[in-house]
Amino acid sequence: MTRKILLVLLFLSSVSAFAQSSKKPHIVFVSGDHEYSSEETFPILAKELETKYGFKTTVVKSYPDENAEENIPGLEALDTADVAVFFLRWRRLPADQLRHIENYLKSGKPIVAFRTTTHAFNYPKGHELEKWNAFAVDYLGGPPGWGGGHYHYGHLSSTDVSIIKEAAKHPILTGIPASFHVASWLYHVKPNYPPADAEVLLMGKSVNPEVRPNRPVVDNPVAWTWKNKAGAKVFVTTLGHPFDFKEEAMQRFVINGIHWAAGKKVPKKWAGKMTIDVNYHGIRPTKK
Image: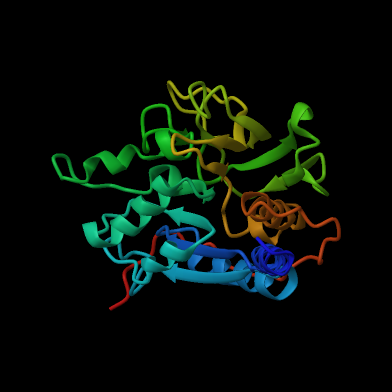
């Protein structure tokens, strides 16, 4: 090989490496959760990531509204995603739509998941896709759907959140206060979830919990990272009430988490608090 050809190859290699390093990570937000207004919070987060942090983003939503359990158009965006961000609840997507999610999950690419995504699917017993009701075990390190040991402490409660001391130096916790308060009612996931090889980042303590028989009120993990069965980096939080996103600590936590999932350094300089004034609408009638 001549010296000239070698220099050309080295140049082309350098150009390719630069192009790869300067490529904007594509973050795809998938919204369909019935009650927590992710159809409104996700576009705000996506815009912030594009305008302040240099990401490319796509937001896809259940259609015609958040109650549409069998239709999320645009899921093919996951085919080119570098990170998928899910906020789902009890969907029954047709096989052709679910295939895009399945292919993404099996690809081993990073996942960020909020709250009810632990019970993202609700196919009826005997359905050919019923196994997806328990997908959180393999892909999120979360409980296999809702019920049993997975419950919450009542809609009148809220949650005090604190950093796990041993995890304090994790990049996702950069700039996060040692403790803060959120509106989300605490989810019970212990003792089996997250799995032992997950790293718990935040612990939640229920404030004004509803006391019910056989539902002991105990502190529970509200955020963790994990490597799932496909080898993917996973960042999961059981927080996600729209009022949570008004809190600057929560905002920075999410932005940090998406950077971490994308393999980007968490920004040392915080771009500042966002205005996220989104209401909790609960489960409301389907639009006509």
